[in-house]
Image (cartoon, rainbow, N blue to C red; front, side, top):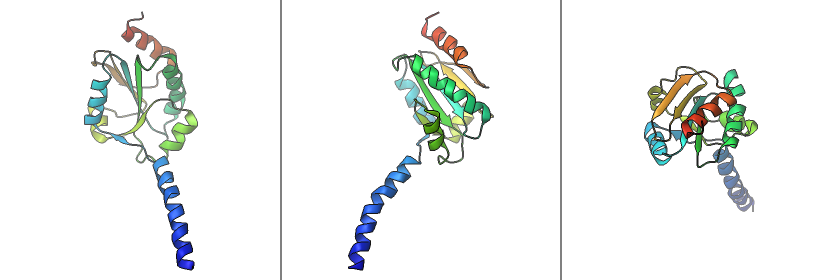
Length: 156
């Protein structure tokens, strides 16, 4: 009887453990995946935001990015968060608490190297034709990001 109860308990807990594990991991974006994402989204302005959960300016900038994401239809703008945290464990609760409304990935080393990310926040902007326009460190305010996105969309 004890063996049956233990087996039943384990079978009931395993799906919960798998679900909990799934809720605490974020996929990693490597350069090949990022290149494919950029290619797939030609025709849109693309913003890559490199951030870390422990970064005070990132904590200020992310709510601004949430506002920017809300201001444009998905057909015009793709915003991608790329965490440089060592693990995804702190990222999941961070993005949930911040109400992040765009996809977030863990940045692979080849991606941070390609964009010369040495500090966060760091933003990279791509024009609709897929060409990199700006890649630089520093926090950007929502109105500045909107002005640049409008310019890249040809709305100014």
